[in-house]
Image (cartoon, rainbow, N blue to C red; front, side, top):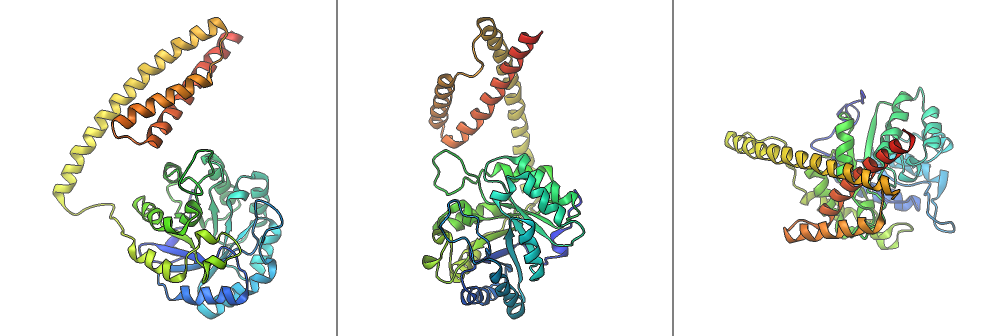
Length: 361
């Protein structure tokens, strides 16, 4: 994809921050926040939710269209560019009519290709940046698909927003970061800028700094952090919002890492270590091939006895044992669990394909 370079339409140094309240609650609250954020150099975009897609009804769902006039005042009084979430073509029309600079597509919308396509169709012929959050579920193809729909509609100024994923596993975060997914999408779409939303990943303001640092360790381009003058009184997501002062402290604590070092000896040492990694990875791949051959033999035996490819008790036992083996070697539970979930999924697919072939051949 020939995505327009971020710096060409949003100049910044090192990284940029998108900040503002989860929801626009009043004109005073919006303007108070914006004027405070204008003093923070890294803040380049002011965000505020106008329409809030809540999980359940009878909760605060945003002030609606009248809040767009408040964003216009933010632009006039502070010079900050403004952005808001849109979830329908009518939202887009209202936002554009009120001079919103950047649109973003929320996680609940990204999961719906029909709605995404309607919105992309509406934007054909329009020159406006669009930020696209990852879908709620950990589906990389769905995220890429949403990006492709807007790109195919002629939108070239696109940013991906990593806001974490909903999973059934216990987690210290509101949404699991699953860092491998933003890494993978950047490998597949190398020109795509990525912004991290540590507010939605964390779900708690005391975890935002550590997540923001992790995002920069992975060379992301910026942060989206929910900021409110009185977070404890916020009408939505109060636990994950910070004050402008706290935002400034978070930004000041972040350490940027360079992709390369001018130290020649460091480069030589890195080359040696990487060659060791290459050798170990080759061994791992060869062992995975041996394992898959055994899986193939198991599939033949199951097929003879008409036994299902997936056996849940065996899966639970396998994962539990591997996790314990890993922990005995100081490898984290999450790491081993994720690795063997992938390995087992591939094994079941191999056996299923084999059984289907035997059935119809």
